[in-house]
Length: 292
Image 1 (cartoon, rainbow, N blue to C red):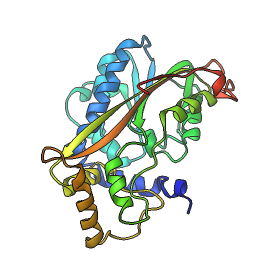
Image 2: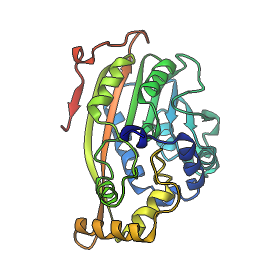
Image 3: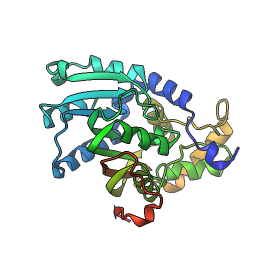
Image 4: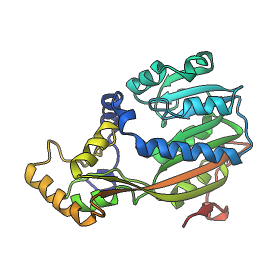
């Protein structure tokens, strides 16, 4: 198996992992909530009020109340590939119980959106597209369901994400242990190829610290983000290998804590008037990059 194929997400395993993690997700998703808050803040600078908004990869529904408050006249569609995640989103008490009539919950895959062409005015997606196998197909589908001049607003992870963990596992065996994350320049080019205009990309590095390797692995499992790549080892990692990974990770320890780095990418772009207006050579159209 080629390296790129080995690092690609196994979609079936990914869905199963998120189904299993649905009840424990909120307890461990500290980084995910922080990124969601930061991408929500970016909406302050964009003057666009959608009639219908689609949250792709809504998970347990953390962003739904904020989106409902920000756009009080909008219908909000919450989509996730995991039925259990959607169940958690629907069942939460509080704010959106009072707004139940404004929400639609949809089980679906971002690479095959179960929506009609030009049916939404805005797509919001926080830390979901890195779980898609084919980014090109994902953006093609998002452009298909967006109305002309509709907005795509998203966050995802870049290739330096989980760098410490990946480096430690590479010293132990040749299997894939982390997902394949795509560089923001390639993401910007893909947007242009699929009918999006005026794309803006920026990045920042965020770090979460833990007392030990066990805590890192536990949290990744609790949010469904443990290894679901095609090139993963089948079966449990042996005690000897895990001990070697643990010892390798210790070189990163600072102030009695182990860091886990996340390269967070933020992007937004506008649906061009015609979905056929893709750019054959994205170098001809500028993408605004911030942070690199």
